[in-house]
Image (cartoon, rainbow, N blue to C red; front, side, top):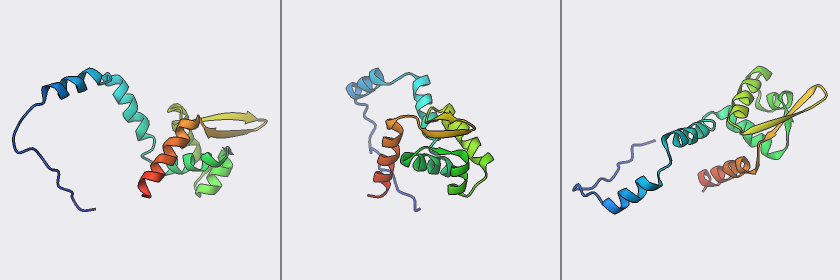
Length: 119
């Protein structure tokens, strides 16, 4: 990718009303850091693939490993992180554990992201 130049103001002029309004509406630092951490979960290709696959149906670790062409251990590691971030949930059926997206918000985020990058 080539560098894109960022346009800057030619003069320094603080728009006090805009700054005040933005500062009043700014969430606290902890909440913003949690939001940043949430998006970090989408920064790994394997995790995104898992989330994409889980949009279609719930799957066990064995199925996910087969689809992604990685080890079950690698899938389990990524699922652990996704579960900690509350992006996936699991249910046990006998000896098999099935994973699915935590809720419809996650499906919406994946769908909107795909729509954005394919425009």
